[in-house]
Image 1 (cartoon, rainbow, N blue to C red):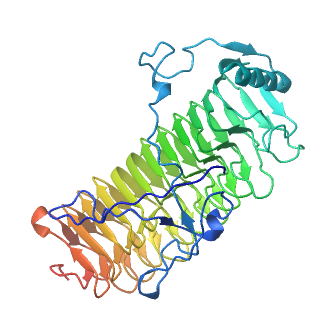
Image 2: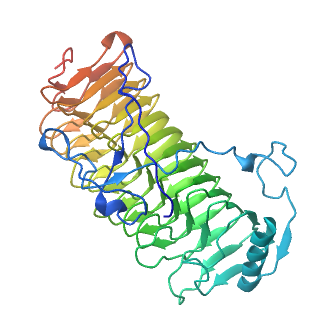
Amino acid sequence: MTGKDTNTAMNHQRHEHEPDRPGARRARSRWWAVGLAGMTGLALTTSLGIGGAPAIGAVDGTVTAADGRPGKPDRASTDNKGHEGKGTQGKRKGTPVPCSADALIAAITLANARGGAVLDLAKDCTYLLTADIDDGAGLPAITTPITLNGGKHTSITRAAAAEPFRILTVDMGGDLTLNKLKITGGQTAADEDGGGILVNTGGNLIIDHSAITRNIASDNGGGIANNGTAIVRNSTVSHNTAGLAGGGVVSVGVLDLKASHVSANAALAGVAGVFSGGTARIKRSTITANHAQVGNVGGLGVFGTGNVSDTRITDNTAPEGGGVVVGVGGQLTLRSVTITGNTARTGRSGGLGIDPNASAVVEDSIIKNNAAIDGGGIYSFAEAVLRRTVLTGNQAGNEGGGIYNLSSGEINLFSTKIMKNVAVTDGGGIFNEVGGTVELNTATGTTVVKNRPNNCVNVTGCPD
């Protein structure tokens, strides 16, 4: 990715009486070197865990947020007169583009030269790209506001026999909107990010009612690699593959995912579904059946600031961190989220993992039927607040069926139920290492019951 990334920091604050954000400290987000080594502007450092144990995702790496810009207004929610509507598709009539890759290339070239355009692609058409024509992409880089409107069965794909190249690049000043399009078959050359689409710093992307599928990145971001601002709404990102991290999406800028599905993506050495090292907002979406092969985090990795609501994170797998991991220095809020059926195949944190110097707030959510060696439901190095949340049916092959809290961890539970979780060795409900803090706050209605072989280890006020 091009452009320099900037670091942000927030002062550490302590809150009392059900804090909204425990330990609101923003440090540089650390991650695997093997996961993001190929992304330009990403510094690599050594990350070690607390007490000699490595963080859930720690192997050597640092991810920093892209340019720190606030997200743009959602253009897709207005029509061409600025009125709120149901998105841009069907709202504007543009220049027709015949069913020919050469015609599409010519139309985008002319649009860039003239300061932008709305292009209406042909229905029932596959625009078949056969050559890398612009620095690793099969189409001209987007440098102005351009909308590509598709239709029924409209797709843009790289020819299977062609040399590797991605489909689209959005450069600084570019503002690309895709409506009712399939982007498929992109494949980057060695040491390149963004198999389907690459958004460089200063670029903007909106994907609406579209599919980003079956693209391959040699490095990061099999479907989408974002250094700018990316909005994905009413769309699917599926069956993409990354040689390193971010099988579906990797973002170190601003990512806004709405009413969309990220599924069945794979990554060799890092987060398989969605990796965010900047700012992420995810709402009314699903992150499901993504698979990290060698690295960590199957579903969602947040290493900056994240807010996830009304979303299901299910059936993801990884060696460690099956469902969600808040990386070192990250801050994540989960509201009305279901984390279920995720698996850490050989390590810690089946459902939710919280790395050192990170923090998580979980409200009105369900963490259910996740599995790991330790910490089937939650595995935490740091600070977490749970309100009105249920942990049930989680399993640990060793300790902490529901929650495993390390000596560095601090967990506050309010009106939360920990029940029917199982650990093979100890701490079916909660396993708290000596030195760790777990506050049940039973006066608010927190209960720890029916866990096997016992409810708690080292937790004051917990029934046997």
